[in-house]
Picture 1 (tube, rainbow, N blue to C red):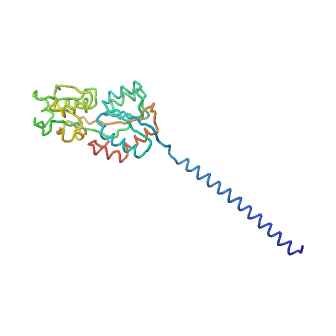
Picture 2 (cartoon, helix red, strand yellow):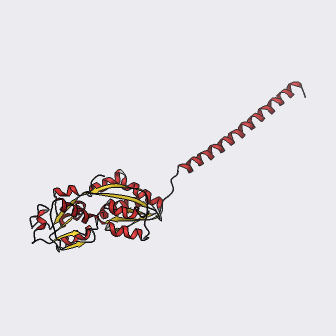
Picture 3 (cartoon, rainbow, N blue to C red):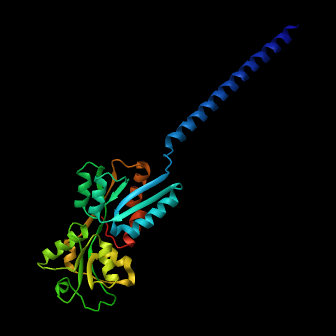
Length: 273
């Protein structure tokens, strides 16, 4: 073999070795990038939500929370939101007795404290809305009720929420501030029951929340009274300690507190927190 041929052969061998090295580095780099990309994707992915979220909520939240529950299910396929709507004190007693639930939304800090004082809540409850009282009368207000004082007329059948329920406690606070004494024909277990007495024409008037008058539409007529400003209720919400579906429960609470959640609640007549 000539010296020129040997030099050409050596050049090709070096070039071939260099190309092989570049291919190896490229493959390694590609593998590293893929691994890194996979790792980044895995790290940024949020846990997938599924299953049922059980929410115990004050009766006055029925319409707005039902709407938010449907929105949640649409946004998170594979989830279902179930509700237990009742008086906040009844719900609190159920939770402290061991009833399985993920979220508690109460109509007053006092009823929320029944749960948190027992250590059944996670973290500090957050106030997400407020609510104000209003008088619900029969459609057209045939008894010409214009004030809280009018409810003391002996000719009127008036219904109040039980004093242990937030709407009842707020009504008593407003009556005390007004130095008025009122003897209702009945005390009801929650605000919806009180309102229903008027809807069914079993009572002439009831002291309920503005949101309930709003939800009832033409079935009742609302009468505002200035003393209600002294008895506005804060509504707190909390994740429960033994929540069976804590991940989805946190997401539902986040929806309630979000701009979209607040929009739904404001449309129902609730006040900003």
